[in-house]
Image (cartoon, rainbow, N blue to C red; front, side, top):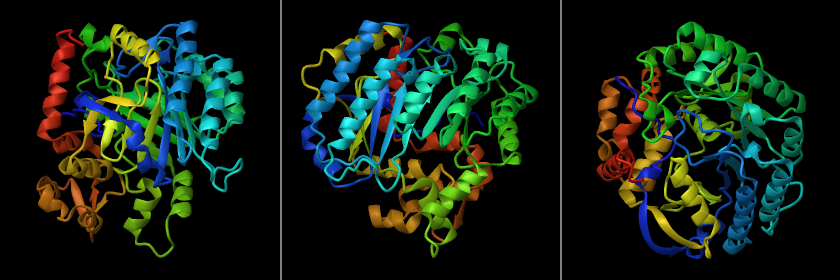
Length: 455
């Protein structure tokens, strides 16, 4: 079996298309009805574009552009009028948020704190710490910026190490060195954050079990609370794709090596790529799970919290918003030319409330999203809950689940469908089987257009 893609959301942004002019003010009441809303800020600036990166980002320092972008985010949030919305989580992604200078970082946090303070139930010291998640990279991690992030409540810092070997970093077209990573990690441990996550890539051409475990050994020497083990997928529009680089043929073997190493060294697998240090996983489990809940329900509450229906509101260009069955963002772009074009369009937008690009999920697509967002994680999906939401049993709506049971990819505990070890290792094969024909066709069309240079 060949890995195809990982399903971190559904449908993918490449399936989005033009929408009739909708207004976000008609959808914001859905956010007011719940406290389970995420606030996302997209900072689309990086020092350099990594070889495998198909994210919306622009490489190179352009202080004037960055300042205009920061002003645009402030205008967008003001036009949204977020007075009665409670956000339970904040994420700052990119790009590389730490690529901003210290003054811009302070301004960003001031904007975030202003938005959070608009909610009438907001208090300066909430009873439960609001998670604030932020991304960085080795060359942009300075002590001054780390101190700013900690002072403003960042609880989870995520950094892409990818490899501790010079030759593998060069293959990935990463510009940082192993020394840069060690220096950054030393600073992070000095300043100290509640959760440190480190990203590692497997499937790099020329990578071996020895080189991967070398990287993982150095990674775990910093005792990170979480590790993400990502496959190298080379997508159209990326520098490695244009260079004709191919992923290692040992992709599955290398995954098994990395998985085995992390499990043997005190980490618990929560999805195909997410590993949590066992003491931290046990803490999350104890905090969230009811004493009287069944084992499957405990894991469902503690580690997954029934994914698929949470709302996310994005500020900035390139981030996705999910409000009910409406998913929207600026049109997806990968190349520098297209990203700059989208970025300038965003900066010059007169009314950010108008939504023109996205995807409205019908009932069938909502079922698929709910299944994808739950079955691919350690907690699995509860059939009784699924019936409460959608009327039919899971196997009635998705006969492929019956096939997965026969093939030992899935096992059923009572009403809970859970991936087996075999199924978890093949999640990037199973997940794409759940994509609808409409979404597949839209994604293929986008991939064709970028391949021939139309986007």
